[in-house]
Image (cartoon, one colour):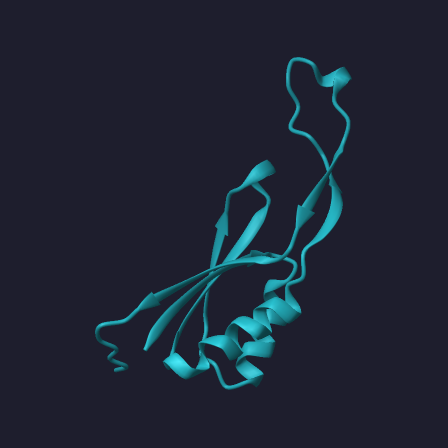
Length: 105
Protein backbone atom coordinates (compact mmCIF):
# COMPACT_ATOMS: atom_id res chain seq x y z
CA UNK A 1 0.00 0.00 0.00
CA UNK A 2 1.10 3.57 -0.74
CA UNK A 3 0.22 6.98 0.62
CA UNK A 4 -0.04 9.56 -2.15
CA UNK A 5 0.37 13.23 -1.26
CA UNK A 6 -0.33 15.54 -4.21
CA UNK A 7 0.01 19.32 -4.07
CA UNK A 8 -2.09 20.90 -6.81
CA UNK A 9 -3.26 24.37 -7.83
CA UNK A 10 -6.49 25.53 -6.14
CA UNK A 11 -8.12 26.03 -9.55
CA UNK A 12 -7.41 22.40 -10.53
CA UNK A 13 -8.38 20.80 -7.21
CA UNK A 14 -12.16 20.39 -7.78
CA UNK A 15 -11.84 18.62 -11.13
CA UNK A 16 -8.95 16.45 -9.91
CA UNK A 17 -10.87 15.49 -6.77
CA UNK A 18 -14.04 14.71 -8.74
CA UNK A 19 -12.11 12.64 -11.29
CA UNK A 20 -10.32 10.67 -8.56
CA UNK A 21 -13.62 9.95 -6.78
CA UNK A 22 -15.29 8.97 -10.08
CA UNK A 23 -12.44 6.48 -10.60
CA UNK A 24 -13.08 4.97 -7.16
CA UNK A 25 -10.27 6.61 -5.18
CA UNK A 26 -10.88 7.97 -1.69
CA UNK A 27 -9.24 11.35 -1.26
CA UNK A 28 -8.83 13.84 1.57
CA UNK A 29 -8.46 17.52 0.66
CA UNK A 30 -6.43 20.01 2.73
CA UNK A 31 -6.06 23.73 2.00
CA UNK A 32 -2.45 24.87 1.80
CA UNK A 33 -0.34 27.70 0.41
CA UNK A 34 3.23 28.30 -0.54
CA UNK A 35 5.60 28.54 -3.41
CA UNK A 36 6.45 31.58 -5.47
CA UNK A 37 3.98 34.44 -4.88
CA UNK A 38 2.24 32.31 -2.21
CA UNK A 39 -0.53 31.27 -4.60
CA UNK A 40 -3.21 28.96 -3.17
CA UNK A 41 -2.63 25.24 -3.27
CA UNK A 42 -4.62 22.21 -2.28
CA UNK A 43 -2.99 19.12 -0.82
CA UNK A 44 -4.71 15.84 -1.70
CA UNK A 45 -4.02 12.69 0.32
CA UNK A 46 -5.00 9.18 -0.74
CA UNK A 47 -4.10 5.66 0.37
CA UNK A 48 -3.99 3.24 -2.56
CA UNK A 49 -2.88 -0.26 -3.40
CA UNK A 50 0.51 -0.45 -5.14
CA UNK A 51 -0.98 -1.45 -8.50
CA UNK A 52 -3.29 1.63 -8.53
CA UNK A 53 -0.57 4.28 -8.01
CA UNK A 54 0.02 4.82 -11.73
CA UNK A 55 -3.74 5.18 -12.39
CA UNK A 56 -4.05 7.84 -9.69
CA UNK A 57 -1.02 9.78 -10.93
CA UNK A 58 -2.33 9.63 -14.51
CA UNK A 59 -5.60 11.27 -13.41
CA UNK A 60 -3.75 14.05 -11.59
CA UNK A 61 -1.51 14.61 -14.62
CA UNK A 62 -4.47 14.67 -17.04
CA UNK A 63 -6.62 17.06 -14.98
CA UNK A 64 -3.92 19.34 -13.57
CA UNK A 65 -1.87 20.47 -16.55
CA UNK A 66 0.60 23.29 -16.02
CA UNK A 67 0.01 26.60 -17.79
CA UNK A 68 1.17 30.19 -17.61
CA UNK A 69 -0.77 33.14 -16.25
CA UNK A 70 -0.10 36.74 -15.34
CA UNK A 71 0.29 37.27 -11.58
CA UNK A 72 0.60 40.52 -9.67
CA UNK A 73 3.84 41.25 -7.86
CA UNK A 74 3.77 41.90 -4.12
CA UNK A 75 4.08 45.67 -3.50
CA UNK A 76 7.40 46.92 -2.17
CA UNK A 77 9.50 50.04 -1.92
CA UNK A 78 10.09 50.08 -5.70
CA UNK A 79 6.40 49.69 -6.51
CA UNK A 80 6.59 51.93 -9.59
CA UNK A 81 9.19 49.63 -11.19
CA UNK A 82 7.17 46.46 -10.77
CA UNK A 83 4.90 44.98 -13.37
CA UNK A 84 2.87 41.78 -13.31
CA UNK A 85 4.91 38.70 -14.18
CA UNK A 86 4.09 35.59 -16.13
CA UNK A 87 4.27 32.48 -13.91
CA UNK A 88 3.68 28.79 -14.45
CA UNK A 89 0.74 27.42 -12.45
CA UNK A 90 -0.98 24.08 -12.35
CA UNK A 91 0.71 20.77 -12.62
CA UNK A 92 1.34 18.89 -9.41
CA UNK A 93 3.98 17.81 -6.96
CA UNK A 94 3.31 14.20 -6.03
CA UNK A 95 4.90 12.20 -3.21
CA UNK A 96 4.51 8.41 -3.06
CA UNK A 97 5.23 6.93 0.37
CA UNK A 98 5.26 3.33 1.60
CA UNK A 99 2.62 2.54 4.21
CA UNK A 100 3.52 0.04 6.95
CA UNK A 101 -0.02 -0.26 8.21
CA UNK A 102 -3.44 0.94 7.09
CA UNK A 103 -6.48 0.77 9.36
CA UNK A 104 -9.87 2.16 8.36
CA UNK A 105 -12.23 2.44 11.34
